[in-house]
Image (cartoon, rainbow, N blue to C red; front, side, top):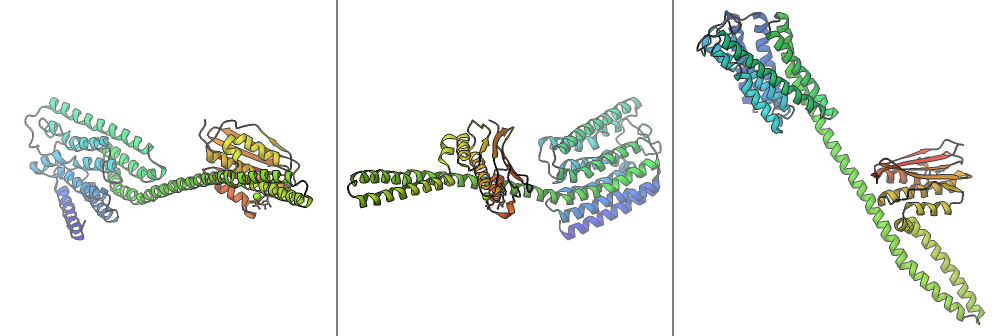
Length: 469
Ligand SMILES: Nc1ncnc2c1ncn2[C@@H]1O[C@H](COP(=O)(O)OP(=O)(O)O)[C@@H](O)[C@H]1O
Ligand SMILES: [Mg+2]
């Protein structure tokens, strides 16, 4: 909204409010004149004022526009205090519009837009029912039937008929109640389906709107001046609840953005681990099929050369030495390949791979059986490397007499526990192994905990999400 337009709106609102004060004070039939003369314009102004402010602060939301509109619709309803039958009739027939805009505002909060078809239907029903529900009654209701003996006669009156007027009024009231119940059910469902941050902005708006609705209903039912005071104060506060909620909406925005980023990061981290694992498997295969198999054939060649060189002792000694060197190289290469990615893990799964780890450890390892089935590749590798690093640490630092390893599937996770009875005092901040494990496990949305009180052994516990099979 341009500044000039906003200025014009302000001037129009001031003029309308001023005119209404005069109208209320001169009214022949308005009760509680002082309250109406003060709060009548004040409520309208507070909606227009906060609406214009909201337009400026959140131009992308239509809420500000609706709030401004609501201020003017509210002024329209106060025309009921007019002594002129024409103005009075127009006010009766259109005064309910503020209820329509109010409903539109509440249902479309905080974007000001109606995304769901059901919401659009509710708002359209509001635009029909609020102003329209009273109109049929006007054909038969004189001042007495409308509960205001001192009011002018409405110009739509065709023939006074108290019974018909009563039926039409009751029908109108029924429509109001029906609409109210639909809106209440919709609001409760919407509130329940919202995130905690969205609720932060919805709750004050819904509570204040509901309270105002109830107070106005009580006041209209003839509860006296005090009820009108309460209704007006609540109505006057309402636009601030809308405004407050609206200004909070950027928090929700940020929250949604943050969640999206975290999700993106998590996915990319998982992809990285998966790609790393695939690369390790490929490297291991290349080593196995390439260098390793060449060395094995070389060993065979050396063996037959050694068989033929039996007579030449010097050559035989040389070939013996070459054979030994070759065996050492082969062993080192196998160890290297296993560190990159153990072939047994790819080919036979977790349990045999863990058995191999336990068998190689320098301290006795008690390995609980399982899991027997195959798990997703990234889960198998992460589990394997947790156990492998933990057992390497036991060998290097723990001075333990024995260790236990247990890998279990619990609901939607795989849990890994490696315990030793050594000296304790493990600290992920003093090395790179445990930290690397924690990163690897976290990339799969899992957790790693180290419990290692000095003198009481070490317990490593990892949990890695894994859909139940
Ligand atoms: N099972 C254990 N028992 C005792 N101390 C341990 C154990 N595991 C790890 N530590 C201690 O915690 C430190 C960090 O472990 P880690 O991150 O695996 O480091 P590194 O990369 O040196 O193996 C080690 O330097 C060691 O002092
Ligand atoms: Mg280590």
